[in-house]
Image (cartoon, rainbow, N blue to C red; front, side, top):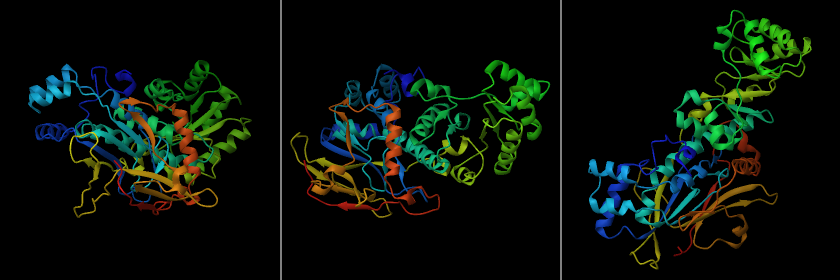
Length: 448
C-alpha cells in the first residue's frame, strides 16, 4: 500500500500526523502513569442522525483500514515531534516502534446505522488505540456524510443513473474520498479522474461552456467535439439558446447523437421541451442529462420529467447540508491493570448536556419482523440473545494488527443497496422524520 492509494500527497509517508496533539500528550501521560498498556475498548458511534435523516450509511471503512496500516512514526515524523517538543523522548522512543497490534470490528462498509450503533470497535492497549481516534473519525465522519447524501439522491433518482461531479467544489483530496463515498451510496460514475485511478470508479465527461465559447460558433464547437469524440458524445446545449442548440446538435451529429446536457434554467420545463424537440428531429434515442446545483429534493421533483441522468456536485460533496456524520470515538471499557487477563470494566461519560454514553463492549443486531423487514436496531453488552444470533452486524476487520476484510468497492455498493432495501419503506421518504428504526439497548454482564 503506498500513499497514492490513500489519496495522500507523495511527500506524506504515513498517516501518523493525521491526528490531534492531545492524542500524543495523553499517551505520554499514560506511559508515565503506567496505565498505557491497559487493555481498552473504544467504540465509534453517533448520538443522533442529522436532522431529518432516516438512516445513516457506513462509508470509509476501506480507507480506515489503509490508514491504520500506514500509521507509522518514521524519522521525519519523529523529527517534527522532537523539534516542536510535543512529547518527551521516552514517548518518541515508544512511537518509533508503533504498530497497531489490536483488533477492529465494525459494521461492514455500505451497511446502514442508527443512533447508538457501535459502527466500529477498536480493541487493544489504551496507548495503541487512542492514537487512532482522529484519523478514524475524520474518515468515517466525512465519507459517511457523503454516502448518506448519495443514498438519498440515489433513492430519489430511482433507476436513473447519477454522475458525481463535485471535485471543483471541495478540497482536492476530499474530492477523491467523496467520489468513493458517492459510489458506495449509489452513484454510477464520477468526473474525477483521481477517483477513477485509485478506486476503479467509472469516469465520464465531455465539455464545458468554455469549449463552446472558444469557437467562432456553436456549430463549430459541436462539429469539433463530434469529429473528435464521435456521435455518441454529450453536447452541452445551454450556452446560448437551447432550442437553437438542440437543432444544431442534431444537424451536426445526426439522430445518433448520444446525449445533450442542460445546466441551467427551469429544468423541468426545459427537459420537456428538449425531449419533444429531439423526438421531432428523429433523435428519439438521444438522452437528456441535467446538472445545475441538484440535491435529492430537486432530483425528486424531476421524477416525472423526461430526464435520463443527473449530474450532482456541490450538494453531494457537502453532504447536502450535513457535511459530517457527528460520530464520536469513546472509551467504553478498560482493564483495571496491565495484566492481559484482567477483566474489562465498563466505563462511560456521565456528565450532563446530552453527551452521555453507554459503557461496555457492545454487540449489535438488526431485528426483523415477520416479513423480514427490519424493525429495530438492538445494541447490547454481554451475551447475544439466541433470537438475534443470526442477525448480528459487526464483522472482524483487523485481527492482531492484520487487515482481514478488504473488499472490492462494487461489493460494498451492492451491500448498501441491499441494506437500504431491507428497511421499512418510509426510510426513503424525503420528508423530515425520526430515524426509521428505534435503537433498543440490552444491558448484560460485561465480558472480558
